[in-house]
Length: 169
Ligand SMILES: Cc1cc2nc3c(=O)[nH]c(=O)nc-3n(C[C@H](O)[C@H](O)[C@H](O)COP(=O)(O)O)c2cc1C
Image (tube, rainbow, N blue to C red):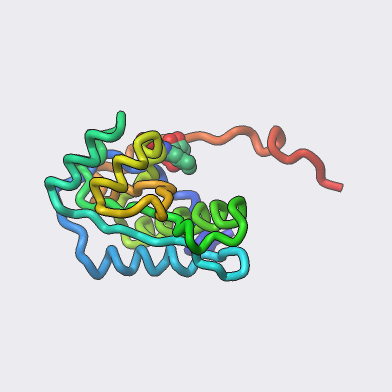
């Protein structure tokens, strides 16, 4: 089956090494716009975003995760938040954030950029909020590291389809 969306889904890999080339503000806004166009329960749109390109702030964030080298190497970071004041159903709002983050990854792929979803940093999410100057009304869902891919040699695999499809009735 040939479709640009399917091609992007299958081609996308987590990119963890980047060149020094910059990502433009226009590209970052386009990527977030793609995130905003994700589905959300009741069209609640509970997501909020912080873009980080400042070197010193990136360094402070790098110190909050085991994956600091990726954070340092990335040209830009997008922190994706849930606005706690806007939650209508915790599970559905968190699911919506996941859909938003996946759109962000696919948009980066479509713009020929690389991205990786960083979740390990959530263990220090309160510290991240302090660094970004946000109150705890914002719940960190992920930090996305973005840049121009240094290479595209990443390999990944998936479980067998037959193992995952429980029934076809
Ligand atoms: C919820 C979540 C958290 C993740 N956290 C990290 C992380 O902290 N560091 C990292 O390098 N990759 C992280 N990843 C990326 C996964 O390791 C990656 O998606 C998986 O190995 C499959 O590889 P692929 O994205 O190239 O297909 C995370 C992915 C998800 C969905």
